[in-house]
Length: 162
Image (cartoon, rainbow, N blue to C red; front, side, top):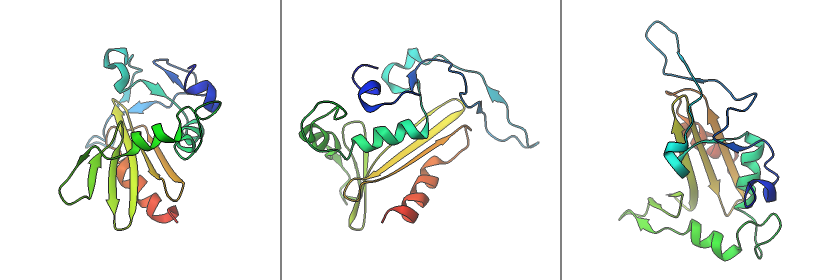
């Protein structure tokens, strides 16, 4: 709260709280066309891997922070050097189409590099894709186990990326 949410103005985000207005999560579509609602699950047992509730607006604030430059302070929760280090590929596929950075996957498609992170927990799936050079972010939040936020994010980035 103190080091990320408050400095970025993320007022609608929390960790491990069943907040009012939280979208109901659903399981996969069953053959009869129904979906079972997924009750709120306290994710504290998964530590830093899950448990964040947020909105697209707050996630946009987080994504915008990835584009900021300058020394740490105020709404710059990391310095330019720390951001570059976090986004830098650490593990690379031999054909340099994808790799891993710190907390992000990195993908190259022709002359563009995308930094991304997705997540899932019963009833929810997400994907955030950043095109750092273009300062463009796509955030997809879904509330179904069989959603495909990665494909949606890729399609959106291909549409708005320039």
